[in-house]
Amino acid sequence: MSEQAPQFELLPSALKNWIDSQLQLALQIDPLEVRRLFHGRSGVLADFTPMVIDWLPNVAVIRLYADINTAQLREIVDFLAAKEVVQGVLIQERGRSRETTFEIAYGEVPPVLVVRESGLNFQIEPLQFQNFGLFLDMRNGRNWLKAHAAGANVLNLFSYTCAFSVAAVAGGAKLVVNVDLSKRALTIGRKNHQLNLQDKTASQFMPYDMLKSWSRIKKPGPYDVVVIDPPSFQPGSFIVEKDYAKVLRRLVQLTTPTAKVMVCHNDPTQSSDYVRALMAQECPEFEFQELLAVPEDFAEADLEKSIKVLIYQRKS
Ligand SMILES: C[S@@+](CC[C@H](N)C(=O)[O-])C[C@H]1O[C@@H](n2cnc3c(N)ncnc32)[C@H](O)[C@@H]1O
Image (cartoon, rainbow, N blue to C red; front, side, top):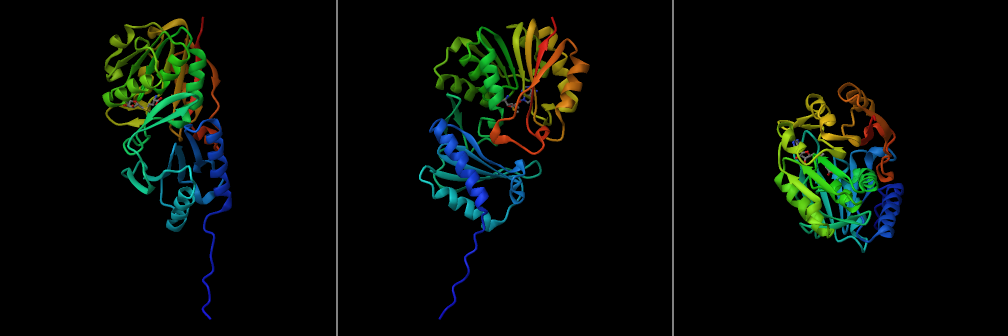
C-alpha cells in the first residue's frame, strides 16, 4: 500500500482571512472600489513583511519588495485565482535596489482599467507604472481636499496623474493648477477629469520642472489651498533633503492670507517631526493644524513609517 504524502498547509489561515475580509469590504463599498488587501509592513504576519496585495478591480496585484518563499507565493496566487471575482493576478517585483518586473501569474490583466475610490473614477495602468497611476495610501488626503476645496483656487504640486485635482474639482474647487514634469502623467490626469465628467475649465496642467518655473506657477494664484506631495528621492528632479526647503520657501508668495497647505512626505525613514522642523524653519508664517490619519488598510505598527500628511494654516 503506497503511503500518501502529508499535505501541509503552507499559507497561514490568518493571511487568507485577512485578504478575504478586505476584499469583502472593498466589494461592499463598490464593485469597482480599489483597496489594499494586505499591507505587509503592518507587521501582522512576520513572514510576509516584504509583501503587499492591492485590489484593482478585477485584478489582484502582489507586490514583493524582497523575495518570499516560492511555494507560499504560488499558494497565494492560487488562493486569489480561485475567487470568482478575480480576473487576473499580477506579481510585481520592486525595490530601490532592483528593477521593477511584472509577471501575469493568472488569468488576464488588461493594460488599462478604470477603478473607483470614494465615488471617483481613476484610470489605472497595472502593467506600466510602478504605482499604476494612483497612490492608494493617499485616500485620506484626497478626501480631506475634497472637503476643503469648495470655491478654492488650488495649487497641486507634484500632481502626477492629478488624483488630488479630481478630488478638489469634485469638492467644488474653482480652479486647480497641476504641476508635474511628466507629460505622460498629466495626459492621464486630463483623462481622469474626463472620466468624472468634470468641467474642463476647472483644471490647468503645467508640464514643468517646478523648481525652475515659479513665475509661471504664481500667475494663476494666489492660491487658497496648496498640496505638496513630492517623491522622496528622484535624482535630477527632486531630493527631499536638498529641494523640499526650496518649495516651502515659496509658499508665502503663492498663497492668500488664509490659505491652507497640505505637506506630504513618504520616506519611511523620516518622521512627521522632520516635516514640522522644515516648516518651522522655512515657513514660520504657517501653523500646524493636524496630521491626517493613515487609511485603515495601511495601518502599521510604527505609523511614522507610513505616508505623512500634515495640514497647515497660514497665520492671520
Ligand atoms: C509621489 S509622485 C506624486 C503623487 C501625486 N501627488 C498623487 O497624488 O498621485 C511624485 C511626482 O513628482 C514629479 N516630480 C518630481 N520632481 C519634479 C519637479 N522638479 N518638478 C515637477 N514635478 C516633479 C514626478 O514626475 C512624479 O509624478
